[in-house]
Length: 306
Figure 1 (cartoon, rainbow, N blue to C red):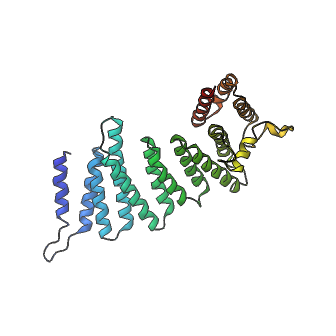
Figure 2: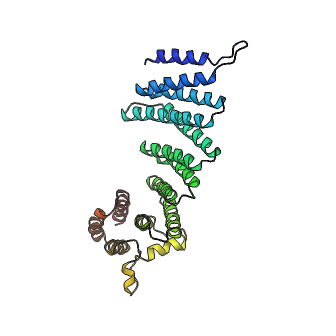
Figure 3: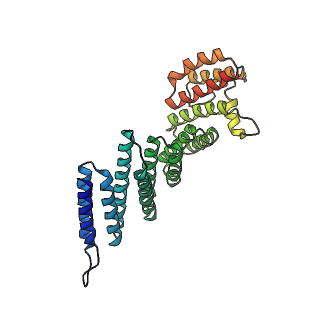
């Protein structure tokens, strides 16, 4: 559908909403027409036009007092705006980000309406959807507040809350704001321990433990800028004890990974770059992409000091 053709049909439907003498406009009929036009535009892959139809549908549903219909229409509009922006970005075309701004506004409005209607989990889902899209667009700083809003709404849902917090930590790491990332990961570790009597979150705790050790080594903590409980995490890997328990400083890590992390800590203390490079080659295949990235940062920092 050409732009002019869309505008003509859109205006035709809008005219039906104008007040006539002794005649009230049929808002429900106009809402159906906007919805049908939006669906046709979606089917022909024209999300930039479809989004405006969905917004018009939302306004009509608000007028007749249909809150679920209003939320559904605004959410659909948000996704259409986002799709339009994604298409521009994927083609590497210049963008004034009008569609992205409209998508953020629509997602936020829909989430607010869901929260006001007493559905915090659905509101959190919308915040997460928006944050994931911003992350995909390589905008971690902009994604961060929406992950935080989602986490605040998911405090009663243990696993969803943990995943939201981990995404917050990921945003901080990519910024890079290693201090705040460390604080969030410690919060996750404590929360998971308190709400996991059956050890169901071992994989999460393993990931968090490795990330915390690497982050602590990167920020070079001291008693002046780091809390004692975080310093205690690193102390467990310094291998200064005499009993065998020091070989497994965390119950969530395998003995092999524990030994490699302890060796890395000692290599950094001794500024032994040759040993550190060897240990990186040994440990890297056992890590996630995010953990490997932090390990590379750590190795580069240590080599630059020599």
